[in-house]
Length: 107
Image (cartoon, rainbow, N blue to C red; front, top):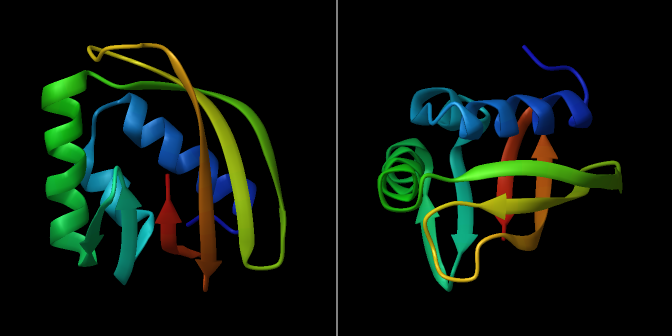
């Protein structure tokens, strides 16, 4: 189990790049919220479906270009590439980390 925010972020990005929605979901708390593209996903099953849809539609790949934060509030920047118009794009990911899990992610 990850013990630091940087390990949690690393585990999340590794699971995303492996297109492994189960391991992505395991990085989040059971009641976590994700906001992406104006939509909101709540809880493990919605987060799992959100990631599977993104993998299927866009063949995402992330290259982390920066990490910062303190306490519960963390950010990472990533060059995101895949099968979508404008690829690659630089995106900031804002996370709230509580009890070793992601409680909130906003992209």
